[in-house]
Length: 424
Image (cartoon, rainbow, N blue to C red):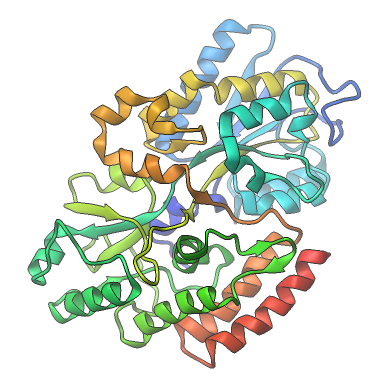
């Protein structure tokens, strides 16, 4: 399947990053796993992140000649999960992975491939002070943290002001806050000649729900897909969000075939669900605006999908002491500021606008995303995470995108399967 630019950049979860060290180690930072020496790190193949990563590594190496970091992009493969999973099995997995998808963490942990970061002295305190209340969403079922929340791309609705104006809509104050307003605006856009009001990928990959259903579900409920071992999506609010999307497809406002390209950049779709990475990608190519995703009644959103990427430390790493120090260095306030400047992605820091006031004063396009960043909802850290998302996506694809059967019944059936998977 060819991937659109939106899929490639938004689902970095599938093409992320990072590390390879020596052999040996355990899943705890204690018991002699605090050795220091050279390590290897892998990072994302996103050009902006590669530039930041090279600069960060150069700064570290200049100050630590006996603990050199060797960095590279993740090796090529069908997906980063597959590459990293194979490395864990082979015993030569990464020291650090900058850009680990939270949905992949439960699988890597089950393989015994990840180190509990809160086992390092002061580890839990560092995680809490940097991330704040959102940290709890990243805890594993055993209560430990096998990932460092690193950067988020809180998703919003991007809209094309020129296409809105062409359709006779107000490009500065679009009516998109409620489901009904969104539907009415979408119909006006399509009637006005736009091919699609919005065009999320209608394919069945497990992660596609992060860019259609999940942002609306998070906005409406503030809940994760699974909480306390129970599926949440079959609730009245979950069904209502799904019925909204079903109407979008049934009324041909969102196509149910794949677009081989970037429908928003190409002017085929008037809207897209994207994070702040899109600001630099679309730049002045599209005269765009951004608003929060809709809620059923227009009430203030209770959250939005984070599109977050974490840093993981892997048990094959010999020099975990250095790896822990590099992880803290890479997520320091200074390096977070450089990451923000280089990529426009939001470091997982408390009260981000106050942490970097000069940046947001000079980059006002990003400030709204920074405000959203304090209210993100993550993919749940539960056993069989990918299988759970795939189970949901299969039910969603059939009942919502292709309109076959009753949504509520399909969601109830899927919820029963998800509850079983979450308990394994």
